[in-house]
Image 1: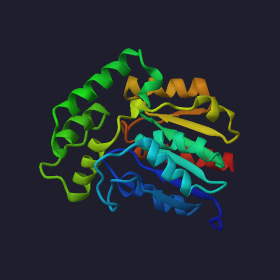
Image 2: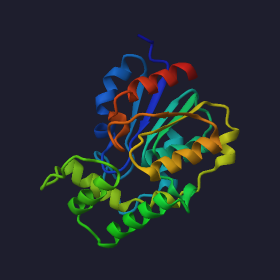
Image 3: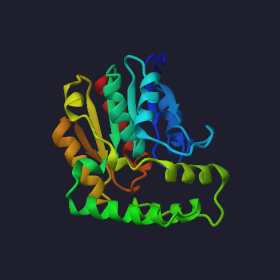
Length: 237
């Protein structure tokens, strides 16, 4: 066991908070590292917010980063992490799994279809439960939506509805490519829109690229995700 010098900062995506996204990995990771669960604004146990913006959240995350951190962002948290990494480029490594930065792959038919469907869902002004029931299949989830959402999940769905669309993010490729820390991009081979984004990240940033399938967009739960992440962190360390 390490002396907990190495910090791993985990940033969650939409709907689920940090505990929902990463809880099953926390104890195994804590056997090796100091683990920091970064809960984004609007998600429980933090209070709800009317509007959530990836730029503001990137600033907040950057303020928490320390030299030598291994930053790991999933989904919307991956977009936030890509931005924060350029605001404070002190990392030992950066890992992102299927960040929905669809703006980097506009023109790709799968990306355009995904964005159109997402905008259709939001335009109906859905309830948190209705939003989740439509959003989950869009990102490859096969889990049924409960008839009544538990309070943390309801707040998470409300937070997802409040988020600025991630395809509006402008990823600073030149600044990121100029950083010296290793980078890892993980995709799940379940949706061509996410694959297209990860292909662009691979081309523009020159990271390691790994595919872990079997969990749709819920990549932290995919078989092989833990081993992939730990192997990368150990190499980067």
